[in-house]
Every structure is written in structure tokens, then in C-alpha cells.
Image (cartoon, rainbow, N blue to C red; front, side, top):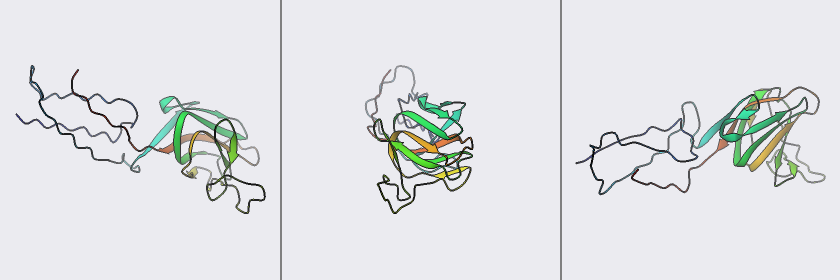
Length: 171
């Protein structure tokens, strides 16, 4: 007997276990061999291997949290994530700092750490509604405004390439 099942998971996060039920197997059937074909698919309107963490209040998807004051917006992912983009309001000209392990460092326009007498200006968000971020892996980041302005982050894009995929058949 040949059974074919499919799971279109473009809206499912790449993290964690995914339980897929084979509904077309008759009761008592035994699987003696299986072939799985994985094909990456971008989410609707999204980019391949990019996920979005959406915030409602200070709580975001997958346990992410944010803190906002009239000078800064800080996001704590509680896990290492690779930055991709940020959207929100009041972010124009805010500068980017990333946590490198208990210490925030400023990031310059080349996506590297700012050094004394750096000829490259700080990385700044180009528009009020957000924009792309350098691909930096970090647990936390913050956007700081040069003056008060109540920055608000609504969504953060992260790059997330699936790895360590395993497949198990059975209950």
C-alpha cells in the first residue's frame, strides 16, 4: 500500500516539535519504510527562512519580551536569534546596540562594533516605521533615540534556518 501525506507548514514556526498525524493509514497498519521530502517554503508575503516575532503589549511570540521607555526600546529574545528587520513607530534615527554577553555594544553602519574614533557612523533606522537590521546573532538588542520620542517595536524579523531535523514514526 502506498500512502502520500503532505503538510504545508509555511505559517508554522521552525522551532520545537511538530506532530503530524497520518490520517490515511488504516487502523492496525504497520509502516515498514517511509520517505520524507522537505521543501522550504516562504510564509505568505515573507522571506524564506525569516520568521516574525509579533508583540502584543510587552509580550512577544516564543517568550520574547520588550521594554520601552521614552528613549529606548529593548527586546529580549531569551535565546540567540539572528536579526533581520524591525517594524514599529517612532524609530527614525534610533541607533542599534546588541548584547554580546551581558554588555551592550553600539553597531556602526557596516554592521560591526563601534570602536573609538570610528569613521563609520552608528547604524540608524532609516524610517519611523522601522527597517532592515544587520544580520547579528544576539540574545537582546535595543534601539536608542537621540532625543525623546516614545519608540515602539511591533514586530522583529529573525533569520531562522532549520537544523538538527529528526523524524520519528510511532506514537
